[in-house]
Image 1 (cartoon, rainbow, N blue to C red):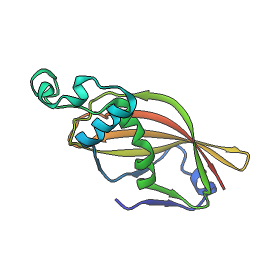
Image 2 (image 1 turned 180 degrees about the horizontal axis):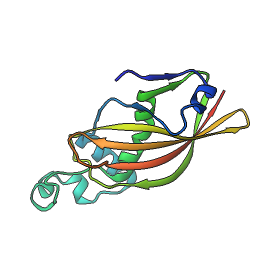
Image 3 (image 1 turned 60 degrees about the vertical axis):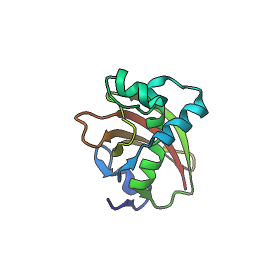
Image 4 (image 1 turned 60 degrees about the horizontal axis):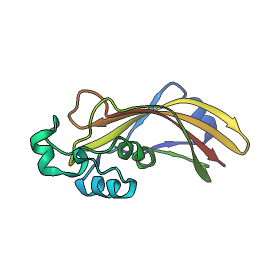
Length: 153
C-alpha cells in the first residue's frame, strides 16, 4: 500500500480518532524468531524447536515471541506513514499491549494505524498511535497496542 503522507503536525492533529493507514505486509521468518530468541534469551521451544512444535504445539508451527511482534511496530509505522517536518522521533513507551493471537513462523503481518491523540510538547508533539497488527488470514489481531511516540520538528 502507498505510504500515507501527512503534511505536518497541524494536519496530524486533524486526524485524531481516525484510522489513517494500513501498512504493507512483513514476513516473520523462523530466522528472525531464532535471532530474537538468541538476543533476548527467551528460547522456549514453541519459538525455536520446529519439530517439537509440529507435534506438540496447538499451532502446529513455531510462533513469534509477543515481544518480537511488538518490536515490529516501528518498521510497520515507518512503512505506512510519513509526517513531513519530523526531524527526530523518540519511542516514549506503551500504554496498553495485548497479544490476542499467535504469529506463526513464515506468516505475514501488517498494521492498521489509528491516531488516538496528539499533544503539543516542547519542540514537537506526542502522538498516541493505536495499532492492530493483523496476521494474514487470521480472524483476530495478533497484537493490539497503544504506542506513544514523540516527534520533534
